[in-house]
Image 1 (cartoon, helix red, strand yellow):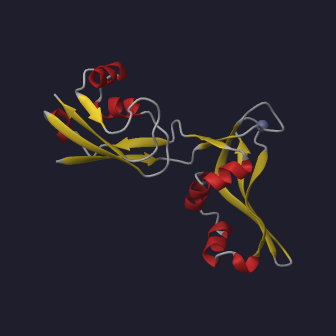
Image 2 (image 1 turned 90 degrees about the vertical axis):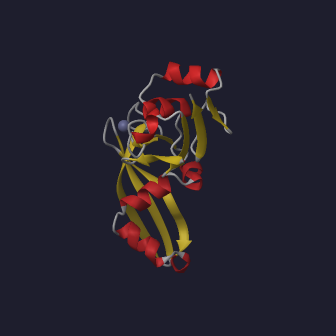
Image 3 (image 1 turned 180 degrees about the vertical axis):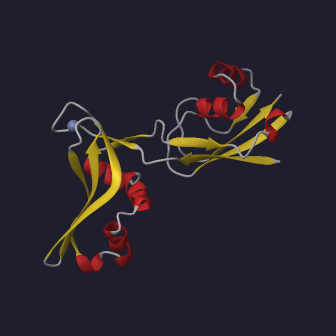
Length: 182
Ligand SMILES: [Zn+2]
């Protein structure tokens, strides 16, 4: 039987970007947008606040785009300061590159294992699914899921008790499966 674990975001990630007003490099989005229309051209930004000095920075979402080419529902979401849209945009590689930002997901996600019934079976197949592209270390995830130390997880990998088609060292942000045979 396949067990599903889900990596769930619990809040918006920290935005890593240098603050021009202070030495900090951490910003937090509060889900607020600013939209500016000039003639038929539209600019839109997602606002982020420096966690140290509170200074506001604007992340470009749309830049001098013809109003007619923008989906009306997208405009509505921005006018309503939709937090879901903010989360989606922060994870968008195009938005990240354009604004030269990276994300820090520490303390912004949780692992949902769907209960502990399956954890003491002899053979356990787990499918890990990511509800957002959150880069996490599988070793950390598995140690958290089973409530054992990371050293123990590393030992299980080394002795071949814990196997996966993907490399379990390093970080992953896409779905994978693993099997534990005790
Ligand atoms: Zn600052």
